[in-house]
Length: 127
Length: 208
Image (cartoon, rainbow over all chains, first blue to last red; front, side, top):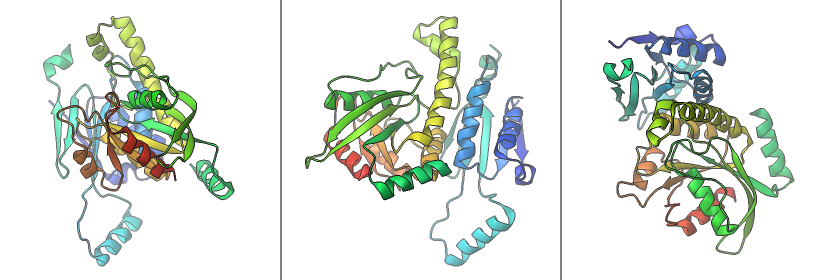
């Protein structure tokens, strides 16, 4: 059975980078796939990889991560202004981020508006 | 990040640094060390890193200083090449056991590899420009590539994407261009030395 845990933007918006990464990795370490509302910024993604490397051990072998952001084409100026204002007031909630334990999620492919999760077989995981 | 910004601003105002720190970044087994070796062979007559098919062969940052490269029009630039370990989001010691390593050796290599990834990310602050080396036969649109390029963009570090392994039948430089349309992409084969002249020209365009 796969467990998907949703983390709404409001739950992490007031956390600093370290706290946010710890929160997400603590969930992933319990063999759950995390679905975060909004994208992590590049600095947070790099820090997440660094922290992941620090805690890799016999059981926890790292993560698979994928950020998806919807890219609008031929956007009108008024739409750009609306989006910018919404980001300013509510934070950047556009897109989502999937983080899964590498022992369960073998690969994540994007296409680019859909994502595919390739999972390891339960048999293999129990070895 | 602020210090690095002011360093760059200072250099811009008071003239070019003598040597340019050129970072080699990319995922594991994309051919960063093969390209660094090819450049060193072309301009110094010697290699700088060991390469192998085993993932995470480069597990610490390797630096080759004072590599002078000449452009087609006779202009010469001096580089310090910074070959970094491949960046990965997962490392499983059992993967190394497929390459005839015993459990102890595989675990040690995995530990060194994790340290290598951390070191690579730390070095992002210390390079002047970067070659992002991707395996042109693989899907370029993965999170490691996006994270590397996103971090370089956030730091305003000039980037040239190198689509390596064009000698492989299923390689496609076009696929990389489509994934990262805002960047210059050059296809090469570091192993076979294909398209290296165009690569050096693009390198000069990157740092000018």
